Amino acid sequence: MESSLRELVILGSGPAGLTAAIYAGRAGLSPVVITGLRSGGRLTIPPLVENFPGFPEGIDGPTLMNRTMEQAKRFGAIFVFANARSADLRSRPFTIVTDEATFHCKALIIATGADTSYLGLPKEKELIGRGISTCATCDGFFFRDKVVFVIGGGDTAMEDAMFLSRYAGKVTVVHRRDQLRASKILQDQALANPKIGFIWDSVVAEFIGDEVLDGVTLRNVKTGEISQHPCDGVFLAIGHIPNTELLRGQLELDEQGYILTRGPTQTNVEGVFAAGDVVDKVYRQAVTAAGSGCMAALDAERWLALHP
Ligand code: NAP
Image 1 (cartoon, rainbow, N blue to C red):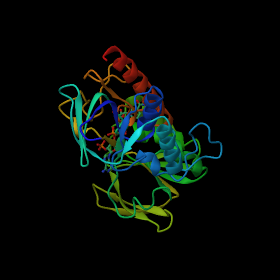
Image 2 (image 1 turned 180 degrees about the vertical axis):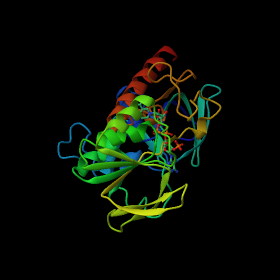
Image 3 (image 1 turned 120 degrees about the vertical axis):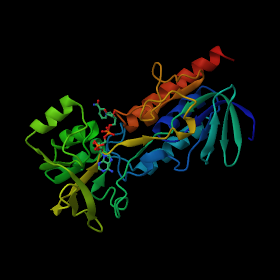
Image 4 (image 1 turned 60 degrees about the horizontal axis):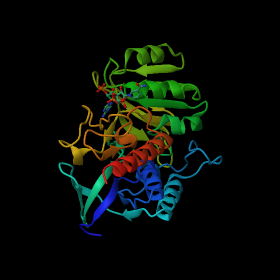
């Protein structure tokens, strides 16, 4: 496989990358998918995905991703279980280097996703899916009539708090300052919602609970006061980090590092397309990522046909 020229390489193996692989495979492009360190992407974390169409009982994230990978293999996608170490997009064919091999390709789809930002506290990762969540849209339903906290003061935190207020008994937003970062309209809506309370100038000092989350300890950053709050759920909404380090200086990115596209998937470099959470900071759903992976594959297929 080393140094051979490929029609299409896809970076990333979440819903966007794998859906792109299915479509590109069916188009006869034999795409090479460089999976990244976590093959299957972030969707391999949730134990139950209930909002992906076609699974009325829900499906666990790893199974959904494994099945999608099998589907892509069936159409000729080739999987390389490695991390891309460098990418050269300055001249065509593009060059992608992994620890194992170097790939040259005529077209490239970037679907490297975005990682959730975590607080970095003990027990945080262990309690994911056991009371701590990073996705209100995915998990809010499980918190009917429960007491939940949302951490963060941006648009995501406000949207999450409002979404959760439809299910939860009580929602409290914890923000580290006394002013929200969120856009005015979302602030106004959240502040006016009777089910949403706010704790200002405060951060999470500790997650309480072993098997499941029992509560949080908060620290007021101005007074140093410590307080304990029993709760059923904590939703982290402190931002995401798009995985674009590899492409910095070669592709147009916004100030947060998300890839900027012209039209749905075309980047500023001809022949390079982008899909999924590495582009999208608003919807961030498996199904929207899959849809944009499909679009990127169709765009790449058309582009390759015009540039044989
Ligand atoms: P964000 O705008 O970066 O906000 C992150 C929030 O988390 C900030 O309030 C920040 O506090 C807080 N935070 C960060 N690190 C923290 C830490 N270690 N401990 C405690 N708090 C911490 O992220 P986002 O809300 O996910 O939004 C990302 C982008 O997507 C934004 O451009 C947003 O406008 C966009 N977005 C748009 C929509 C929409 O238009 N409907 C919906 C969602 C997201 P500080 O304020 O003190 O920095």
